[in-house]
Length: 328
Image (cartoon, rainbow, N blue to C red; front, side):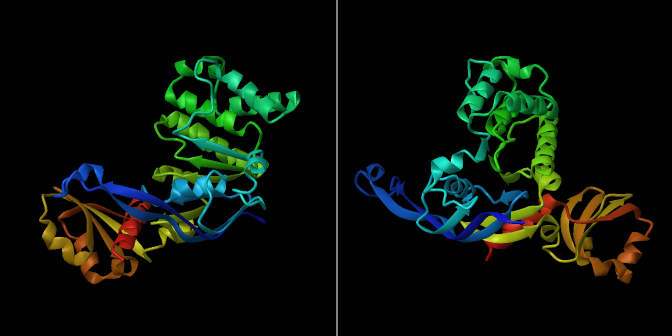
């Protein structure tokens, strides 16, 4: 399987400033202290054609800057990047014919016209033959359960309906790769499920690559094959979703329901307390400790009504992952 994205030692910095207001300096609010912020710092990774890739990272980690470079909007300060064999900032127009861009913050459609008019505009812009256009339109209407939504003015649509139509307008030309930047923010559950189904079907049927930034854990669970985590502009994790789930080794979460109110301090010796309520406890322990006689005795004691052993939740793993990087 060939590589559709290649990034090697990519760097990008921005010059910014902060006001000196509040300090005992004459006209401090008009004075500025300039500094250089590294948005991307020697970033390297590869993406194979046909993958669904999740790009994760906290706000300000460099996700949007990276996407802007990969679609040719920004020039890096150093390093190399290749998308479909082209350097994005040198081949921006040629590249634009072959990728799709879907962003929750930006709308592709004309506000006062029905969505179908924006679809027709996309057909003409990308020179899609009429027969292919009609076939694709039927495909997306069925796949996203659009009904007659696309025949109504965009400004009258709900947020979920508008975002689904925006997705269609962005991918009608069947691009080889689709960049999605927080594209489902504010979507209702039904719309989100339809969109996930569409992504999986397009990947399977047309081998389209999806490069997605998100903070929504359920999306990672449902879609991710390849996960890239960046922190302060650097790649700190680049592997599969299952490898991410194993990041903390053989960890298990032990949930215990007690028959009475508990004293949390009494149970700290068993492992890390993840969550504690009046008669409920969630403890993180190493898997091998489940055979420890003290743990077995606790679970078999009369004070325990029920218990459950599970893998750590992905949202918990991510929060621990980010925390581990911040303290280094």
